[in-house]
Image 1 (cartoon, helix red, strand yellow):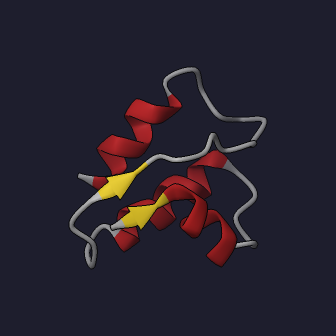
Image 2 (cartoon, rainbow, N blue to C red):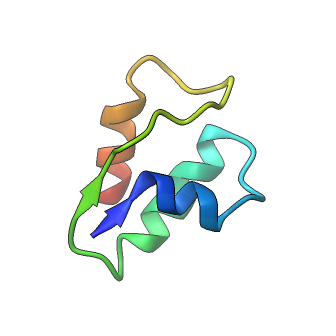
Length: 58
């Protein structure tokens, strides 16, 4: 299972929400499940950030 907190800790170079989406999409190729356990603290995170992360994973 892939946790969002794990993605954030393992990728400190990620500075924007769009970069985070790209990392999640890449990691989705090797993971079966995704759990959003924290809220990303990016200033450019949209209101529908959860939906967008889930869409990037699928």
